[in-house]
Image (cartoon, rainbow, N blue to C red; front, side, top):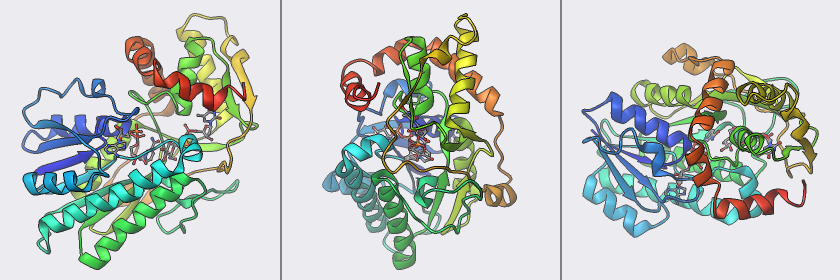
Length: 350
Ligand code: NAD
Ligand code: DAU
């Protein structure tokens, strides 16, 4: 089987690729990634010289290039993760999100359709999506697979749109697909623009920790390797044309999570207890900020037997240790363009 993974140099993609390349030597896994600011081949060191792995640098929005690539390799299956993924960036530059997440996904779907025409036996287009397509919850309730889509940010609207287009290819062209909608991931290799790695980096450097609004927003956190395991399961055992929600059974208010992170960092960095908490700074809220995400993951649990394998405490410890032990990785990704992004995003606030 030849598998095309898109966005494999990013955070989640790098864990999915590593799992597939190491676990399935009989598959050939291609990694297509444009290496945007979020893509980093350092994330793939463990597999870069494996014979069943090939990296291809390229952009999913380049239609000619994508069509030729599919004609050349005739990928049996696609796991599509490439995306613009950060909500704050989507507020500043929505077009980039529309282009990659909607147009790019459609170009991939077309190339896949044209490669296999109507002969889709054993083929699969696996679209990796987010719980943000459902919009926001109030203080109670959970997102299920039948919750109506109600996205609030350009990022989530672009992902919602791509989900709909994938589904439409299933209905219109009978193209086999699965979609998974996952909650917030954390773990190794995450770019320090997202809450947990940003705050770890700032604590290391004794920089302010910019908590949006009053910090009273809730997310459902999942360790990234558990997401990769879920993707492996759905890829092999998921039902055609089905959607599966993936979550951590692990809701945290931002401010509570940040305080736990501060405590753990104080211990790891041998700083006095309470030291990092002093860095917490409440800043102007994110526009359109979704109050609460929480996933009902009972479908994937009951049908495919998936559950998170690590507790949040274990996952967070692994994550903090990884960032502390990979200071060169962290320095590399936070040099250059990162600084100008950071200044634009936070300087007015902090
Ligand atoms: P990421 O930003 O870390 O990585 C995205 C990758 O896609 C990068 O390697 C980047 O270079 C590549 N890419 C971007 N534009 C591209 C283009 N035009 N052509 C080719 N490659 C391109 O993202 P992530 O956090 O790993 O998320 C991966 C996927 O999972 C996304 O589709 C995202 O919507 C989804 N998701 C993320 C989370 C999360 O918490 N991070 C949760 C649920 C779903
Ligand atoms: O729910 C899944 C989604 O989770 C994914 O689809 C997205 O790709 C991923 O980025 C993530 O989106 P969030 O917006 O929830 O993640 P982020 O890490 O940006 O923010 C988490 C929470 O922390 C959110 O309530 C905003 C808040 N926050 C974030 C940053 C970066 C702050 O208070 N301060 C910050 O500086």
